[in-house]
Each structure stands twice: as structure tokens, then as C-alpha cells.
Image (tube, rainbow, N blue to C red; front, side, top):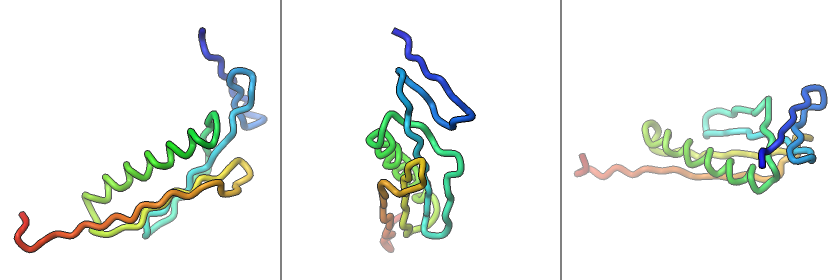
Length: 101
């Protein structure tokens, strides 16, 4: 059975399987800067948004390995009213020993 999804630009929400899909915003901090999400993303629910927040953090941590030796990474997930619903954090640190190459 094909999935139906309708975007209603004037209402700023998506209808999937006959129900409104909630909008979530992902604000990212990397210890040096803050990148607020201005568009948001529609998900079936908070669990799906939470899983994506963790995926974002893992990808950010992988990028940090190429640069800084220490970073605090954070993703704050907010609902469509911009109320925070969760925050995920990772503290990254890399220790390089003298004899390592």
C-alpha cells in the first residue's frame, strides 16, 4: 500500500496517513558556535526526532576527530512552539600519547 503524505504550506505541517506530523527543530552547539534550526523537520513523533538527534551528534563527533582534540557537542530538540523537548550531549576528547604516530 502506498504511503500518502500531503504538505500544506499555509498551515506549515505535513499530513501523513490522515494525521498531522509534528514539527521539530534541532539547534546545534559545538562548544564554539550555535546553529539554530530555522526550518524544522516533520517526524512521526518525538522518538523519531530523538533518534535523529543522536545520529546528528555521532556525525558531528566524527567530524571533530579531524579537528579539535576536545569538544562539547549538543543538539537541543524543540517542538513547533520552540519549547525544548530534549537535549543530547557528547563530550569528545582525544589524548595523543608522546610515542604514538
